[in-house]
Length: 553
Image (cartoon, rainbow, N blue to C red; front, side):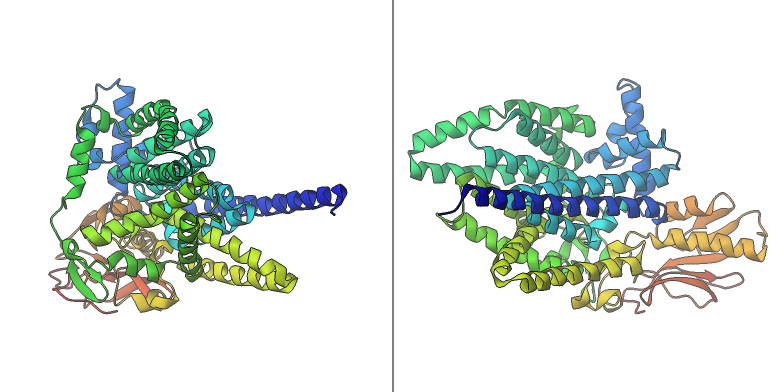
């Protein structure tokens, strides 16, 4: 018979361990914040940054004018997206002592770290402190998430909004059939932010409804269908304030969605069809029109871009969660099983629907950054399960498991340090790194390296003391022009036409030609050229673009 004092000591010891694990998680978050604060200025601008900054300013004007200035409600196609991030960044730029685009990078980092925090809390909610810590480590060391949180005004904030919604859903199922007002509010805010960021936030609704049907089915077996339905009805009734709150939050960050009753459905229709003139992108060594990308597009890039440790534990976590959901006895309560199902759906359903529906695909898998937090949570659950199995084998087995996790997490961190500030271009060892991926896939599709190239060009010209012969330097640019214009300043003019230009600035991607001209310098990471700058004065060059085909490095 166990003595009560011994039981008290065991409980106290467990609480102390949990505190230490939580302190480690807080340490990871603090360290990430410190690194982000030290490096956010390093990230260049991409294709969409300038336009998104304009959208943010127009949203500020919309609210400041009492909805009299309605330009934001018809601005290019961005009114079809929520502008919460752009609005917040525009307001922050009026307060913080940084430039507009530096502020956008800092705000992006802050939003991304909020996503890390919520991922930790979700993993902890489902599997305890160790599961939360491992999930946090897996997401923090994922280059695709970490890189995009600085640079991506659409997909990064959407990923964070989606994981907030998922945390609310999981908490609601844990409290089923009586969700607390705090959980109702969290769910409403999360769903409102998710749908208000991108119309694909509707996946959060599916993540809630499908597990709810599962819970009703389980409870109807245990009691009676009528009783289970009544219980579900009372549960949903308590969420009416949450639905109203979700609508208000959605309208705040995406005003166009509420100015007319059917606008939400118009957005769904708009994004259901490819809305741009088709172009070709490089996938698996072939140039393929983006509406014709194979069904293997997302699974292939996920397998080649995610860190190996995240892939392994995430897939194990999916399998383990499905087993737990299906198990009648060992899977826990119906609410817990429903919560696990919600996380599995959040990590897999968007990819499965994409494989079946085969929509237009481009820009790598940036549109799927929002599946990474739930995938990391499932990886954390798998890691904690493995730790529990190692515990009876002794301290040596636990140390070996911890060392394996450390090495697995350190590998992508080292890769990110070598690629910085182009972490989002990371490819894992299965792809042969960025060097192995270069002939087969696009790397810097965002065009970030042109900012570094622009800064180097300005420094080189200043060092040489050269002056333009025509008042301004003319730079022919193959890639996004606004980032180059911002980085170079008023003494430079950008153009797509190389005839008569002084310099040519070229992304290292397949569509930018190699020129027969002196190379001034290259932007290189891991032996791969991300951008080149040529001196084309006095040269006869007719185009910056390649003919159809793949320009091998």
